[in-house]
Image (cartoon, rainbow, N blue to C red; front, side, top):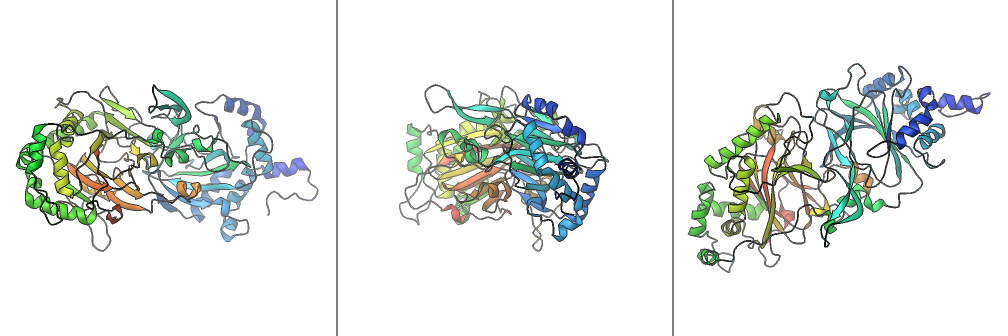
Length: 606
């Protein structure tokens, strides 16, 4: 049967009723109340059609999808999910379509002129606004899957909808996760002009202000609006799959303010898109620095030995594992770095201080009921926020907690201890010269950095052009987390990590729980927006897994992006890190090209 074709002897009303047969008729009659509810909704215009399909219909559609569809796993900085059937490209006469007649009937009903007219009315659009373009797919979010904050704006999308096919036999609850998160938008504060001024561009708040359960046979819809319709899919906690049909209705033209959309913001290099701040100069204007610099035997020709001054070694030995301060180790590390443009130094901080940082960090995780020891993922988005730890956004680019405590003398908390390292070691002239010895790069001219906590089930960063620099940088990231920080081994045939699934180091190394740092190339300028939402990160240069008390050094040129993958709710702990960037001068021939970064995720280290 060709859906939508008028039968002989039928009038227009009976044809319309036939086409819309899968949809509960009482919803269609309640359009005035639905319109009113939609127009009054917050934080942006949205609505929910409960009991969308007639009794028993969607259960049969679900059976068809389960029986005849295949899924493809997809993962990027923005999402982790399985995509099933692309209904937009599924033609009526295909073999697959013949196996799923009820799914095809549902698709035709959703994109029929009659239902599009109904959608136009309840969303207060002019009649004829929505075209007959079919754009929808069946998606599946299983345990650990998620979709981070974005506004859905691509091309001429006008209305977004999600029809939930979660198993009706098991009522979906908070314990299953997978909620649809809605975010309020806020005007951008332009901090680069005199006095704080508001721009027309809007960004999402750090936390969602409303969430909706993916209840079976509910259809949620909202207007796709640049810089306003910010939403996300919370991580799925349970073993129950979150199945849905997700799609869009298109208009004839794209919105006039397309430049305010999420993708445009992520690809903008404007100053207002920078999330990292300015580089700071080193506090090195003193005689001690001049004397120490003279002690460093840095010859002018390429065969000269780069040695660490005794005074620098003496100072750094108060904090750093002395193995890494011997000239033999320095030379070996430098050789590795010159070859790979990256290196990981395990057990970097001296044992007593490292243990104190890890103990206080994990104690805080236990207090907040986060990580491996928790019985259930937190539903409290602001867990861990305090006077010393602030939540950092905006959510379409990042979410994590940053330590803002004012005292570097606090030795009782992980944040205070990490700040002591940042202020007294990592920003010191001695450490700057040490980095030169380890990497053979020119001495850094400035630095910037943060003390961060990425909480399981909540936090991440997204790759965006605002973090691109105009000069090369050396990333120095010191991580603390659950585990011993040991080097994991791999099966030579399968490439899988060897060890127990309960081993915290193995869990981090596997990448299955997120939290790893990933470096990718800047995307081609001619990549279509729709491709960017759908494609995986196939430009990966390097992936660095979390490892306790491990310093990661990575050279990054102006064309390289990085992100910290969303930390899954089942991760062993929070990721606590001291993340610094050192600005490297472009002059000279000692700089390593980032195209030489080794893309292997199995990072060997010292």
